[in-house]
Image 1 (tube, rainbow, N blue to C red):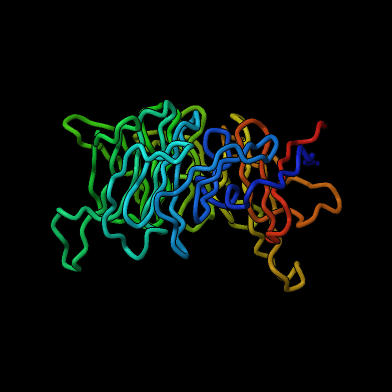
Image 2 (spheres, one colour):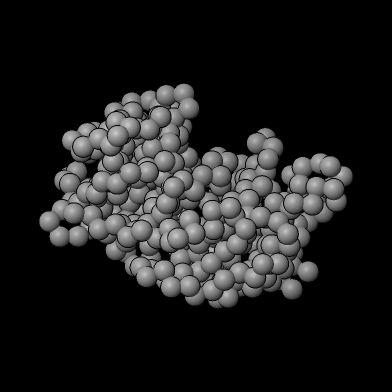
Length: 337
């Protein structure tokens, strides 16, 4: 039996830090609020910084925003621009965003690099690019100097729906994943951003980069996991068909540590659940070959049971967010055996 042990209840950490794919950055919880972007400590739950917005978010706006690793600035996105904002509210620079496919919530994302020197941002349509037969222009992705807002590189391509950005451990590539495809970006010569398509022929999506530089990837339907190399997409491991026990991935899995992957699985056997909502199970997998280690049992009486949302932190601990938003975020580790 694999048992979970409660590390801490984090009353101050918003649930969005667990549920959003960019909700944890550089060891901090990041949560977008209408008037500010808040940063919370994952050891105490306390709010460490609050970066005020130049323009408040509108109803339904949920851009994927970013912080510098040293918290010296945040990257805030509204319907007009991407802004680098310092803790006191000073706007370091702003870059206009283009028309988006729908609203800014689904079409804008930003992330800083590990050294904090560069901000990558996917910011809507490139207004000066030719339109296709539907009148749509390709979307614009830019690399920006965090110090002064200079444009370092840019690329234009179609399909910028619900983007997220994930820094690669090599410090060179910025990974992106969105509804229609995924890829890797890097700064090339002559201000061109080099784009590598990582979707393959089976609509792969990036779940998480491995500490060793390979990519944990899922097939679009969520039935299986693979580990592939970057940039050639060579398959390094494939999860067995029965590893999920007949269920499907409920959310992108992640690395509990360098050796283990934590996955949340939606069970499909509703009859066994008495017709109720299918139960959720948290599974441990070997990172090397993606074989199943076993399911995680939580202490009896844990409110919310195995939570729908998990966020592995890479240090052997993970966060959970229950379906009931009134329950707090919790941080767990594996109990000694």
